[in-house]
Amino acid sequence: MKQENLCILVVGGGGREHALVWKLKASPRVSKIYAAPGNPGINKIAECVPIPVNEVKRLAQFAFENYVDLVVVGPEAPLSLGLSDILMRFGIPVFGPGKTAASIETSKVWAKQFMTRHQIPTADYTIFRCADSAKRYVQSHKGPMVIKADGLAAGKGVFIANTRDEAEHAVDAVSSLGCGAGIIVEDCLFGDEVSFLVITDGRHVLPLISSKDHKRAKDGDKGENTGGMGAIAPAPGFNKSLEDRILEDIIMPAITGLSAEGRRYVGVLYAGLMLTSEGPMVLEFNARFGDPETQAVLPMMKSDLVDALEAAVKGTCDSITLDWRDGACACVVAASPGYPGKPSIGKEISIDEEQAEKDGILVFHAGTRLERGNLVTAGGRVLNVVGVGESRENAVNHAYKGLSHINFEGMWARRDIGRIST
Ligand code: AMP
Ligand code: GLY
Image 1 (cartoon, helix red, strand yellow):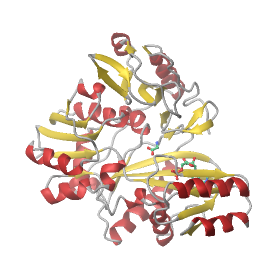
Image 2 (spheres, rainbow, N blue to C red; image 1 turned 60 degrees about the vertical axis):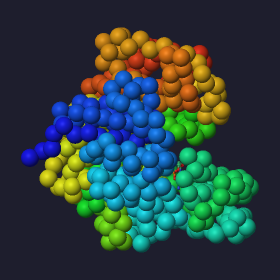
Image 3 (cartoon, helix red, strand yellow; image 1 turned 135 degrees about the vertical axis):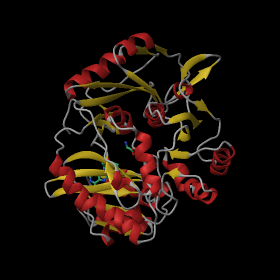
């Protein structure tokens, strides 16, 4: 019999966690949701607890004292700090891998070597332990080359260098972040990018629909890299045979490889892929739901998310399947002036919630906070405006219509989310 009246703690406070809380709230099996630290949008539908995501002992203590039945970890930082390991020691079910399994995201060097050990297709690479040897190597190679830092770098640890000099500067930039276990120099891959995520119990997988985020700041995929300016699900051009190939060549070898190496993996395995002329290749793995992909994927899920998360923690992902609605979902990020540089924040936000609801638009909060009772901007990426439709075009138009229901000084967004194929 299914457990009812569940109490769930969602760790995190961004748009991804708002979407997770929104979806969990729709489950008839859930009676209480806490979010730590949450945000003003989440606060309307769950109880926010002011514990920062990196205070893993306090989070575990809170879950223990409040009889939490399931902890869902949003961001990578608490995974890298061992939150799941502590919760497992407390006997609290947790959706999110332990620290060593999360290395698949937290150490790019480890992840590349893991892919080699398990014949998972990825760009050819060389690892350097110091900047000098990396520089000597890039000076003797032709561009384009991709230079990557080892550890978590909040999206700032990857550089595509077209010339040897650019590559040398990239090595300097990467070493200034601290080299971790080394500097990676890899071949540059070409093709369309896709995010493919599965929920896993460590043996079986439940694939989510494909998605595509838009990382660059400017229309036409130009400008600086950002945390993501929007997403579309499913990814344009994605199909069942591609999904089968990704599962067979990439996802299952990774899941069985992790298990064979004794790294118990329960949570989301996120494969960032390049669809090259030679087939899909891994750009990176993440050990968590994507942001902003999740904001576009979850509104398409017809199944109860709690059933899927529970199957993962109980090891029964082979006993259920996930249902998805037809059509598409688009998420457009409303950003602060200055982002992706230093954003100008503290601007009052207006949201016409009545109109948004009438139009069926979802607004997930990311960088917002309450100041003397007023909702103000608190980060670079402020709100995620999400629209669902029978077609991609429909969903995109819907999301952009939703954007007209919100405003703050200097607000900007990309105008081509879901409208371009690369
Ligand atoms: P990563 O954090 O490793 O996913 O890299 C961030 C972004 O850099 C990716 O989404 C790609 O757009 C780009 N990238 C990373 N590795 C490569 C590669 N080998 N070839 C081309 N682009 C890459
Ligand atoms: N959207 C990219 C990520 O979640 O890492």
